[in-house]
Length: 116
Image (cartoon, one colour):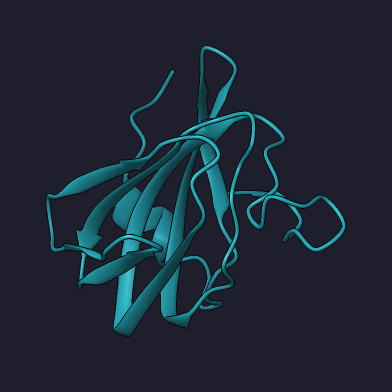
């Protein structure tokens, strides 16, 4: 067993909106992701969506108001709530989701899972 260095894992890729699995916890994937620009509006009908900002800033747009997050801040989007993450500049996040959860809420349009 070894410690996981999130900065080292983030340094292994440059693509935005392509989460990388860095570990697993009780049936959940622990993922890092680089984001920039606007993602798609989506929802997860079966699970909450956990966002922890490691660096940069993001806004999670919700139909009834936006949530702005900076380094060290987290937000959990409740299951079934439509949302759209946006980052004006590159931000780096830690995500936690049940293993196999499609990042777009739809398996047909989801990014493939990569392990780093």
